[in-house]
Length: 489
Image (cartoon, rainbow, N blue to C red):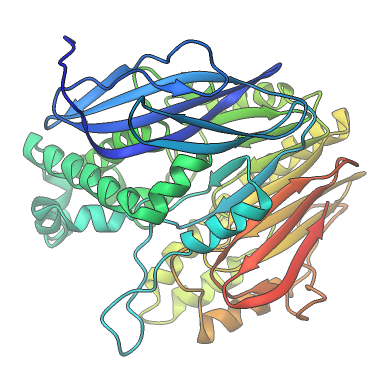
């Protein structure tokens, strides 16, 4: 595009993405969305000799998306680094040293719409300010986001055509085409939602200061995506909903277009967004468990065939963190599913439970994933920790057997309130159930000695850090709670 000499108008950005490490380099990308065709100046990055030129990614309704890709040199220890525009705004990040161990903030549901506070007309604000304050102390290297970065249902509600379609009888819905007008409505609604959500001051500051790795879940598409009846899931309209959400996910959460993904996206051979990273001798594998999901399967056979090869890329790691969206190592939900199916008015709960890894719908695949992970851990000596969205509650689970030990960490919600009342009680009761899900294996969710409970019913986030002994140390930061919930693995 021809360069125009004018001051660009920044609508959003920078959004900072982690792309991986390579020897003494820390690879990052910074995304900006500008109003109009004015090309931004080259980006200046402290420690990088040459200016970083912009790359035009795409345009939507005269809003142009630009990206800067650069590698930052790393010293022996952590350092602060500034990046920005000449005579313009600049931002500061923490770059890990070559001998530093990773420090990660894990958040879930950061973009979800919380219900209004009782008796008031506003929703509680997400905990971004609290996370930023903790960042001043913890100095996070990465911001890992495990789903709900955007409220997919709010996007759908902003489309009049989609809202009208949802009000039609099932037979009409199934036959209804996905029109170009509906596609444009959904793309624009999603684009605008990201601009508004991520343009808020505290969110924007966090996204500019801490490089992100983001993996979507059903909340980023539509509530319960993958657990809907076949007639709905295979309809032309819902497939179109998925494709629109996927394009916006790639643009905002991956910082790319689908046709040109970054190297850290390993799943593109199957049109999925699975990503993998090395952080010294710690690995991070973020599995895309939504792109191929339906009521009967989580992954396609092609993706199952690729999984062992993805794991082998981490063979030299001491510890591997695997992101699974919904929790992997919690007690089975089949009994609650059956009960909710018998009781009137609980169809929504039944659908949510059928979306879980421990649902009766996914028993065989769950066992297959456990076997794949334990075989890798046993063969290589690499410890594995599963990182998942706790759907509003924090906690931990552990599976022991066959000479290995897998841990599960459940992340808190940064925005939506934790469950209360009967749901909160049922969650704690479920966590108390110890079981032998496979021959020779025992699954437990231990109590936190600090509270005597197995789950944390607060908003918050999870902090992860690897110590000098190679242990992964997890700490839950819970809103309004000074208790130090922690786990060493």
